[in-house]
Length: 189
Image 1 (tube, rainbow, N blue to C red):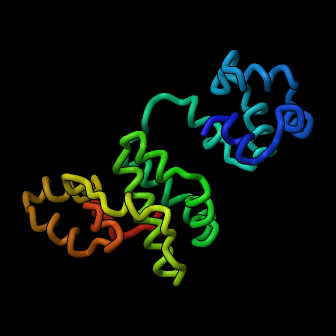
Image 2: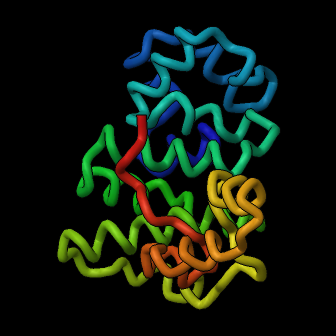
């Protein structure tokens, strides 16, 4: 979501955001019109806007950043976010962010399905009903199984495909349903 969409969703005007954040109205107006790229603004400006709009700096900058990060880094970021926020806050933020649908619409299927698997898994272990907004996406599945890089390397070094088979067996059901092998989401450093 870009800054205009975030402000619309929050029901706030440029004037109120500028006033609350301390970012000059003309600067905000230039950002909203596309005249100024938010990704080129100072960290202080991005920080002030993110606080007033109640989003992370990363969420605010995401539309202005071009490259897609590696899937391994994406998975790590999701696991770190879960660790930092806790289960319920993670669920709320993940669902409210709309990222699952956004990634899916961008054809970023591994990211969309990984995040959905995480939401479904955390819902299950916390006895929270599944969000029914994702019923259609839940029907999707990656064409090829996606393994963690550590499993791929171990199988290659040991020259033993049984390592992959064992990883599939040990995978969390919500992930393997989408052809994503994931067995540990909490062991992040």
